[in-house]
Image 1 (cartoon, one colour):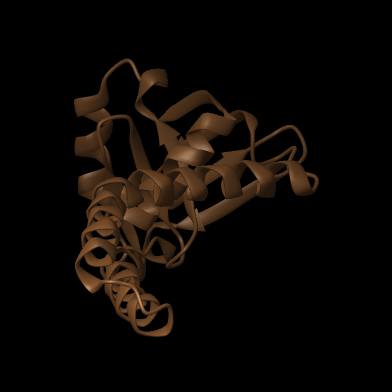
Image 2 (tube, helix red, strand yellow):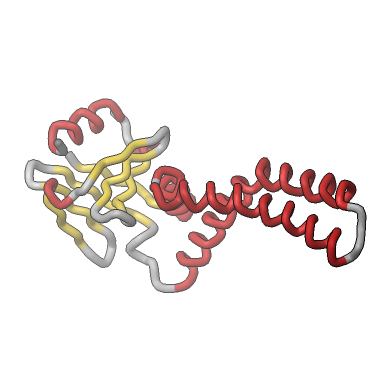
Length: 169
C-alpha cells in the first residue's frame, strides 16, 4: 500500500498535542501545575495578611478567585505553550525531511517513509504502538516520536485501519 501525503507544521503540532494529552507524564504535569499553583496562591494570601497586617478574608477571596480562574483556564494556556514550543522547535533547525512531501509504503515487512532527501525503513516489530485520533494515525517508533499519517490524505481510512491492525498486534 503506497500513500503520498504532505506533512505540515500543523500536523506536527497536532502530534505534539496528542502526545502530551495522552502521555502519563503530560497528564501528571498538567494536573500538578493546575492544582499546586492554587494552593500556593492561598498560602500567599495568608502570608500577605500576616506580613502586611491586612485582613485575611478579602485577601483570601481575591486569591481564591485567582485560583479558580487558574484551574479553569490553565489547560488552555498549557496546551498553547506546547504548540508554541513545537513551532519554535520546527523553526530552530533544518527540518526539510520532517515537513513536506512524504511517500509511505506499507508492506508485509514494515514501513518505508521516503522524502526528497532520505528514505527510512522500519519493520512492523520496531513500531511500539499505533495510535489514532480523528485526524491522524501515529506510528510510534519510540516513546516520544512517531510517523504521522494525516487521514485527510487517505481515500479509504477504514481500509488503511484494517491493514494496519492486521500488521500490528
